[in-house]
Amino acid sequence: MFIKTAFMGLLRTLAILIISYYIFKFITRYIAPIFLRRMMRNMSEKIKRQQQDQYTDQSGTVGETVIDKKPSGSKNRNNQVGDYVDYEEVND
Image 1 (cartoon, rainbow, N blue to C red):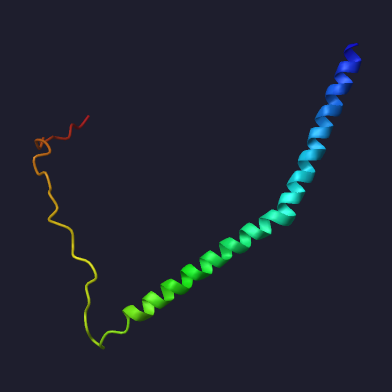
Image 2 (cartoon, helix red, strand yellow):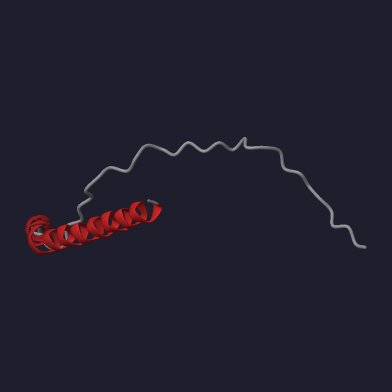
């Protein structure tokens, strides 16, 4: 009885592996190219937009300095971090 149960478990595991292999093969053959094609199209459109934006930004007069964004507000530095402790080296 135990051998029959172990054999059925082995067959079930092999069937799952074979079915998984064919599902993976189907996905990589038919679905992945569609996904990759769509991703490549989106990337190419994004690159075209960036190139067009870059070209339109450079259409200013020659020698003109353009600052795109205003620097953020003053940086608040906390100079009261702690006390300075003077130390001496100890020679042995």
